[in-house]
Length: 333
Ligand code: SAM
Image (cartoon, rainbow, N blue to C red; front, side, top):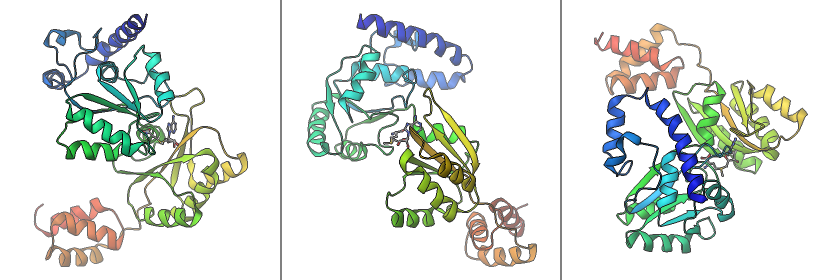
């Protein structure tokens, strides 16, 4: 019964994979297939994605991303690894069982959460030393991203073991791509501190960063966090992405102050939340004369790139414009 469920899930997913694969670059596929951890069985090459039994795994720690709401957001490789790992460690074994049951998987399951970390870490290190394959999952999304696993990965590396990332969903990137805010440079800042003083100090630091900000937040704390953000980050565009990939998924996009006002009136929303905040507006560009004087002086000490960054920081205006000007002053264009 369980095998039939895995087979059905993998075969239907395989059909989707094949459609997607048509657009993949040939060299990407060749590289993936020649990587033994992605496809150890040469006989399976033309049926990638259609495995009916999980291939054996190399010994090592597999950090496996799992869905953030929609159970179908699991990769074929994650299923392979969870089906074949000698042991699977989960933040909460009850949560893990729901996912594993949905795919008919029954691995040897252990707990790895913040409280059990020391004991479980020793157990996992012993398994790795015995050349077992160990998978780590969290309740949802990518382990280590505001979830347990960092110390374990460090210990595994220190112990000379291989660490295999099995990429997949993460609420941070899902929120970013739904936000409509610049995605070329972003900083993931996790959860803000719960206490207002520490939260304001953290926001004051984040205000200096010239990038889109991604934060996790809980419903009950959203109203006060947005109010502090509106005060300390200034009038920036933002998005509140809630219940991503789930039935009541919603992304509200507006200025920080308008979002703060909306939730102050509507009250704390239910569900899980990612807040995405656009980068600070560029300050008015300095005059050409001022920019040139600054750059000339800076170029005597540092590279074109460093001089441009320093000029944009000190004088405002765009880094790109300062870079173009610095290149010109250096006689490179
Ligand atoms: N490691 C996870 C990841 O990669 O997505 C994040 C774990 S962190 C403990 C949980 C937080 O992620 C939630 O409080 C919420 O801020 C965010 N989150 C998780 N799932 C979400 C979803 N479906 N929609 C919006 N935010 C989500």
